[in-house]
Length: 126
Image 1: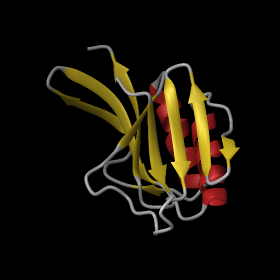
Image 2 (image 1 turned 90 degrees about the vertical axis):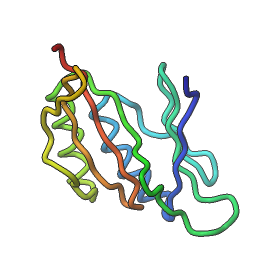
Image 3 (image 1 turned 180 degrees about the vertical axis):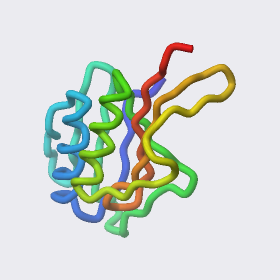
Image 4 (image 1 turned 45 degrees about the vertical axis):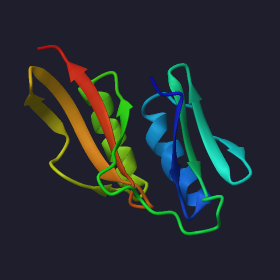
């Protein structure tokens, strides 16, 4: 459904360091830098971080979450630990199983360096 997701940052170098460390736990290669943007390109889509083109400060989406797919609960745990080590802020419950509407998910949530809410998710068998 989606071709790409792009979020804003106020410090591209710090964002690249943070997301390179975080996304490496999901087997994503370091970002490609394109002027005021960085791109993480995978077979399933593109995640990008950009300094706002209009020159205004980047702000996070109130109520928005960017979710990254993980292959296992262990990968979710590694993602969360790498994000905290890179300066991310743990939010909500600690990483773990959440159940609802017939789904069993292993989730972890963080705020990145610019306050964006991000999540790693592994869909578990019921």
